[in-house]
Image (cartoon, rainbow, N blue to C red):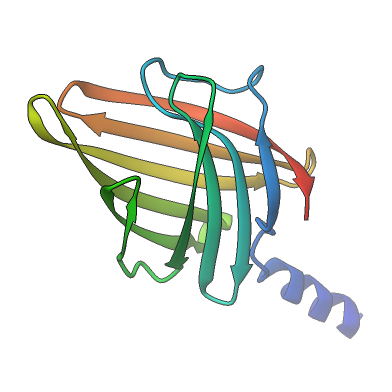
Length: 155
């Protein structure tokens, strides 16, 4: 009985396993128009480090990858992707073992600089071996939201 209680407490305190390569399920996902689509993501969590390689389709059928290393304690990190500065921070949400990620990318168009603000909530569906990412994106043109559903390709 003591072993059962110990095992239950240990497994209840463990975080969900996000690590692996995840591919977008377009049939299940709620995709907003005129916004980049995250088609694949490779996630590797080691301790408090979140290492990702994200692949985006911006509407031209090609995938544009970038790598990012964040800490899961809410510390802001800065990188440059395709000549655009990106600030991002990530943190665990203990009650539901989700990851919250906030980012700001500044890009330059014909009207000058523009900010693309994104908030994401990542959750693992253990029953279906799936990753869901709910997002809210904001620019001066307005706000879009949706949900990506991913299936695990590999660990």
